[in-house]
Each structure stands twice: as C-alpha cells, then as structure tokens.
Length: 242
Image (cartoon, rainbow, N blue to C red):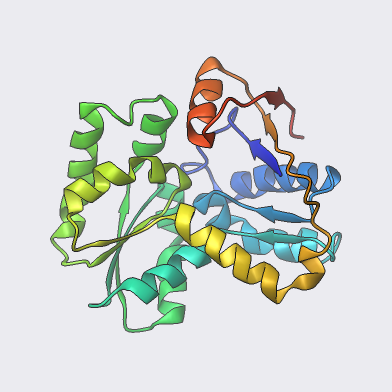
C-alpha cells in the first residue's frame, strides 16, 4: 500500500475545478510511476470534480491496464440501501456540495430520493488541527446539522473522509434513528466486491503487507494525527508533486 497526502495544498474543498484536476493528475502520475495498479481517491472533492476526467484522459489513454476509483459512489449506494423514507442528508466540503455530485449519483440510483446538502467548511481544519474532541467541535457540528435535522432525514452521508473521525460526536447529535454512512465502512466493502468482479486487477496487486506513507508537507501535527488515525506510529517521506 502507498498512501499519498497532499498536505501542502489541503484543503481542496474551496479550490477551482481546474486546480483540483491538476493536483489530482499529479498525484495519480506519482502513484502510477511508483507501480500502483489501483488508485483510490480518498477525497470526495477529488472524486466529484476530477475522477471522471482522469479516467478518460489519463487511465484510458495512457495507462489502460490501471484503475482509478473514488469514494463517492460507494457512499451513495450505501445510503440508498439504508434509507427508509428516501430523505438523505449530505455534509461535505464546499467543492463537493457545489459540484452536486452526491445529489446526481443518489438520484441516478433512485430518482425518488430527496437530497438535502450542507456545506461544512470548518470540519476539515478542525480535524487537521487536532481539535476534533473539543467543545467547539460540538458547537460547530450542532450548528451545521440543525437544518438537516429539520428535513426529517433518516440517513446522513459523511461526505468527506475527514468526517469519520467526528462520527461519534455526530451520532450523539443526530440520534440513533438516523443512519450514518461513512467512507470507512462503505469503501472497503465495495473495494472487495470490485476486486472479486475484476480478477485481472486483483491478481497483479502485490500482497507483501508493506505500507509506505508520502506527503507533500511533513509537520509534527501530521505525524501525530497520522499515527493516531492509522493506529500505530508511521514513518513519512516528503515528496514534491509537479
């Protein structure tokens, strides 16, 4: 496994579509050149604003045997499966919300669903700064979620991979009657199914249990938070994306 975090240029959520596409292309090129056969965008903003173009322009034309997948469709499919009243809430970055990607994918699966979205720009900086356990995190989440709760949603998509770290706080606010859809559960399950359907990809993946971490900017906070999220101490190498 190779992890690549573009910490020098995060967050992507407020950037233009062209900038997100350019940054994402640089990341994919780096990973492909480091022998990755399959790349997953663990970022809903990149998944919604760059993935399809990269699949068309880079994968299909230059690396036809490799694959790039996103996290948006697995979350949408899981939400449709869980909803009972067809009212689904989405919290995500400004870029993901403005792209309307979640609403589009949800309605492609079930045209009858109603989708209520909320841009939540403070949550990524909150997690990145290590303040996700603070009282201010509770206040920010309550303020963001109150409008969605008025819509009688029964399912809530955490539309950013950072938000999984806030899931317990979110559960306390929305209550047990609302289904929470998080990438950390939806994506591994869908990836397993994908590899079962595509043995030509599965058979070329190395299985030596090695994990390498790369980032465009190393900070003490990144090392601390990265180790906390991963579950053990990580060693990180700094690289330049061009």
